[in-house]
Length: 138
Image 1: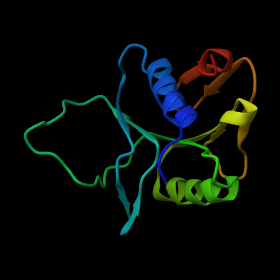
Image 2: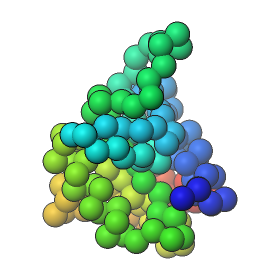
Image 3: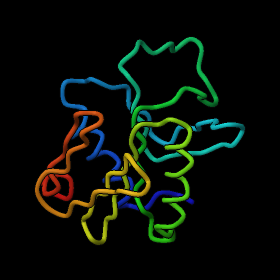
Image 4: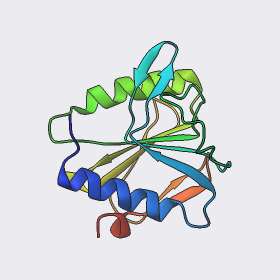
């Protein structure tokens, strides 16, 4: 499914707002190989490392620190939470779901205890990053 207009805009906004200080390597729509299954999250965050432009990778088996999914018009929340369950079971520390129509960010470090933000500051305590909801949906 191709990203929509709002989807692509929000992918840019969230990456820009969360990477103040350039603490991370941020990848957009990169294929992750998780226990033999391919996943293509919207945005993944890794620890800051030097990029090897000479030797590109088709897939990554490295665990990102954070995965962000932006709900598309034709996706269901259940589809995303199923992915989050796989990501968290694989050892990824944090998953975020951005829901454009309701201007909501859901932070999930534990599949059974997601935190939802529709205003103010959404803070990921595990990674020590935060985003102002009003700035994201500006």
